[in-house]
Image (cartoon, rainbow, N blue to C red; front, side, top):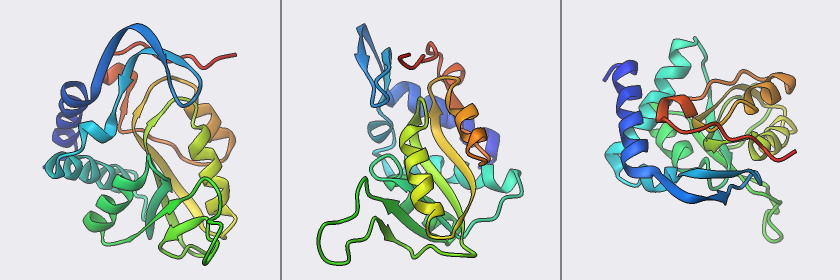
Length: 189
């Protein structure tokens, strides 16, 4: 499947299977309010649909001439993509816990071992401000790994891109609020 076809198919999948519009706004993880809720996990619950999304992520990186050794991000939003992209691109996967595990190895990053020389593709399901991904970015950078690209299935607004630019990382979402036909989310002041 070509990148354009994957992208067009992703729009269909997200809109038909993951988009719910409410009469009244609901609160998002960022604290922002929106009448449109994108449930990426529900949208991509079928293996074929997840495969389309992961292929689109691999295609996006290739179209930007970005090579990577590992794929992951903050758990739960990154989990399905980390595993799927690892299969599609034959790379390592990882997830970042919100806090280090309080037992055993006490790790905050699970899965592949990251360190100096590791090129990382960070993924997220939906992004509004980029807050949780920026948190995960700092944890990944602390290992010495280089974050070469951050992407998301859907960017719900126009605030994440400047935040990633300020953090010195390339950001390119697969889809934006425009693609799925929703109003942009404006974070609370």
